[in-house]
Amino acid sequence: MVRWVSISLLFACGETASSDDAGTDTASPLPGAETGPCLDGLCLGSLACLSNICVEPGNESAMATSEPTTGSGTADPSTSSASTGATSATGTTTSSGTGTTGDPGTTDDPGTTDVSTTEPVTTTDEPTTAGACMVVDLVPERSHVALAIDRTWTTSQYLWDHDGNGGTPWISRWNSIYNVMATVLEDFEDDLALAAALFPAVGSAKNASLAACKIAEKAEVPMAFTNADEIVLGIPGPMANNDGGTAMRKGLINALSELEGAPPYAPRAVVVITDGLPLCAPEAKDVYEAFEVYDQAAHTLVADSFMQGIPTYVIGIQIKNVTNPSNGNDGQPNGVNNYQKLNELAVDGGKPVTGGTNFHHCNNEADLTAAVQEVLEDAKSCNVVLPEAASKPNNTVVEVGGVAYPHTANLNCDDGDGWIYIDDTQEALRLCGSACTALKSEGSATVTIGC
Image (cartoon, rainbow, N blue to C red; front, side, top):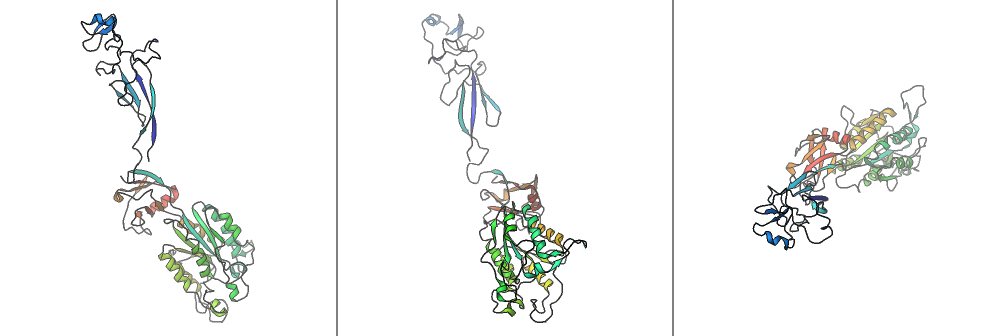
């Protein structure tokens, strides 16, 4: 862009003009010039000083009848006291020994001691065309995260020792889910756009029927920034008497729909919080298929989403590592190990936890709080959109907190440090490893492009 800067030019021309010259259109001769006053008895060039007036030798008689002439005011730099004092856009002062010239081709009045002019000049310290060299501070493109929250009957009917204190009453799992939503989300609502989809929907049947698999047409709380309060108000209260079956795939579909409007380079993610397994398949024709047949298609959904750049974080609440017995219609698919299946779901979602259990396993409210905080922090963006495509991509420099991080074309962001171009357009960068961690802490990166 072109930045306009006002520059004041100050001119000085030796002695001041007499009061007789003020307000007239005829310029007074320069001191030391022909017909001008002598300078300490001296004149410029071959002029002679006669009665304190500079005249040509042999032309003394013409002095009395000659009219004042308007000259250019140009003098030998070695003898003239005329100078300019123009202050540059950077605050430095430049001097010139040529006369008191303002605009090119225009001669200033040499009889004026002080002349101040203001005119626009174009500076080149900012880019004026595409591909120009620039240094910019850039904030990350904020992530969009959809929460898929289990509100089945087990979340309100099953109590747990939420605080590990035998002296306090146990509370429902749902009570803890609500508490975590109410305390954690507000810390992330400025950095993340959030949405919340419940499974099943409020008002589902309490008995084992297809009506227990009810789901809303869309997420209960739509995607937005700074909407932590809206999410807390949009889910059942802490003492809710929840109902219905684990219609997880339907809830995931609603959650994924909320991510469709995200900007091109905004990271997207789903967080599923559950105390059960995917049941209530949309294709289920009867109660048996809804509650006794494991919905393996939920794995396909999260795996396909991950291939499209949308990972799924899995948070499980008190999941038992046992194989369900073959005992009929109990809402637990026969021969299925819930713990192993959530492990598989976390791997399919692309965000498994290292160290044994692949999903975030929570046995109390503190575990649940830590898990939600961890996944939301991980979901925060390290993508930076450039003001324009990098015209010299190999010369781009990325610094965070004063530390420069290297560009590695084939860097795996999961286990490397540095940054990469997100795609071949070279319009956006992704910071990885320690660079990503620093960006989340500092809040911005200094990027040099086009240089």
